[in-house]
Each structure stands twice: as C-alpha cells, then as structure tokens.
Image: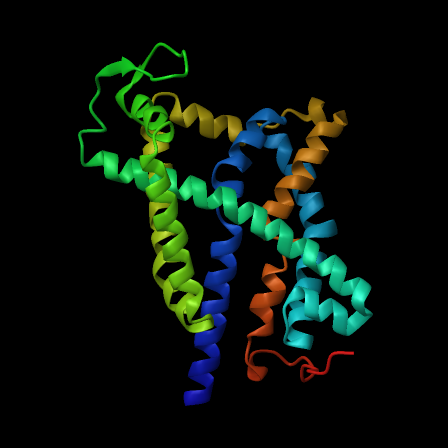
Length: 264
C-alpha cells in the first residue's frame, strides 16, 4: 500500500509539474489573443487539428522516450540514435533556456507590480507615463512603464532567479513540493482573473466573440500557422521538458519496459 501511495503521489506530482510547464502565458494570454486575431471561434478548428494530428503524438513520443531511457532529452536521443541525436536534443534545451530568460523577466515585472500594489498602485488617478511618449495613462500602467525603466527591476529579476535556483537545487523533491503549492494557486488566480474579466465592460461580449466562428479566415495560412504555434505552447513540446519529467516516473507508474541505462 505504501508503494502504491508513493506511485500515486509521483503521478500527481508529474501531472502538476507538466501542467505548470504547459499552462502559462502561452495559454492564458496568447490563446485568447490568437483567437481574437485569427477568426475568433473558428480558431478552434485548426487548433484541434494541430492538437490531434501533431501535438498529442509528439507528446506521447516525448513521454515515451523519457520513460524508456530514464534520462533527459539529449542523453535519451544519444542512447537511441548516437551523437547526432544528442546534438539535436541540445536544441530543445536551448529553446527552454531562452524561454526561461524572458519568463524570468516577466515574473520579475509581476513581483515589481506586487510590490507596487502596497504603494497605492491601484488608485484610479491618471498620471504621465515616463519615457514612452504615451501621454496620460492610468496609475497602474504608468507605474509599470516607470518600473521597467528603473534599475530597481534588476533586483526583482535577481530575486526570481534566486528563487528558481532554490526550487531546483534539491531536484525532484523540491520541484514536486513547489508545484503542489504553486500550480493550484495558479488555477485559483486564473479563475479569479476569468471572473474579473467577465465583470468588466463588454466582458461577456468578449466571451461571445471567443466562441463565435468566422470561417472565412480558414483559407488564410497565417491562421493555421498561429494555431500550430499555439499548440506547441499548449503542450510545452520541443523543450525536452516532458522527457525529463517522464524519466523520473517510478517503474510502477507505467507498464512500459524497464528503462535502459547504458549509453552507447
């Protein structure tokens, strides 16, 4: 029974970690923006085609590679196809590294806005925005543009980098403990933001638009390109993340063959 509970805890931790990786700005912000840009409700057609034709098969492949080899993406590909495969695998790690850099910056901005919220940030007054030539903006928007133009933001960036290093320092134990807190918290904030968005002026009309298709855009190549790009963000593919997570699943978590540990 203890082993079964440990397996289930590993599965839950895996699901939370995978969803935490996949569900971010790419889904929360970019999906609705792309849907608005590419035919509103009609965007779902190329998106689901991309999801089932390419997304899910690639995700199963990445998970299977990690579970079979018990290693990260570069080592997994080396074990399966030699040094050329390992070389290709490092491009996935490079993608994840680049994305981490700008996500850290965005998180630092969020920390800065959180700090600013204790300084009367949400007052309704309009003030001049510094350095962007946009004239008078709301207090929160003006604070944001002022903040990112100051060296104080570097402190927020360093803080977020340090926090991430602490989280990953102890490996899967610290990561699993962290996602069990932050991923449910993320879902809570998402629900709050959805409710808040629907209560804004024309919020319900925006919801109607999201599910009202404009099929005339289906002949536009940009719509399909946007849908396929969105799908990769949705499933967090091409970064080696799913392979790394699957490599830590215990043997009892699946019925796949015992992972091979030798590297040719």
